[in-house]
Image 1 (cartoon, helix red, strand yellow):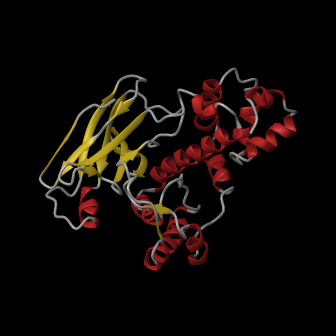
Image 2 (cartoon, rainbow, N blue to C red; image 1 turned 135 degrees about the vertical axis):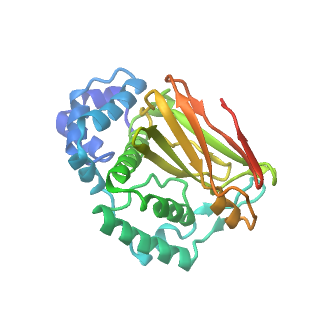
Length: 289
């Protein structure tokens, strides 16, 4: 780990090598080098996003994707998810190994995804189990090519910032490190967080809904990284869709609503928290903090 001042003063070749550990797209790296010196953590996070979304092209996104190892076979997936998911609840500690059925389904989904889109499945996998990953890839493989590229490039930037935080001291203190929008799903029937619920975020346009992100709630019922750091939503109309049917099926419950879609309007750069209170026969929402 190095300080921001160190990054600013490193020789070009050395700085390039460090930034390449975060994202291999040369266009992004070159732009980041041009932006030096960085005055603060906020400055770096904002300029990292600008370099990705304003300077890079689809060719650069594919270049970045190529820097990730391909995980599409049963053996590598078994190793990755050998013991990755913690039981819900602070009173318990332990791990849940992914089943062979889940691993095989995930391997097939990875192969099907690459055959359809021409690049490997990119997702910010931190804290996600094999079951989570399978739910996410099964939702995203239904996208058309342009929509999936948009989601994949957002996931890539999440990964890039995670690596930048590991590289540069103090970046985690940036006010731009947190997602512009967050959510929290609560199961009011059971009186606990609705964990493992798939949620999709999209923008409403005259031509339909443009997918932005697909995530799944953690053991606390939250998704904190729907948007990549430094990437805010422009003013407009958006919607968040909660896959309540699969949630209830996975919890051996019957629910009246197969999904819940919350429409909302973004008008400024303030944080938007869109929670859901759900039970089998009703739901509510409000603007949280």
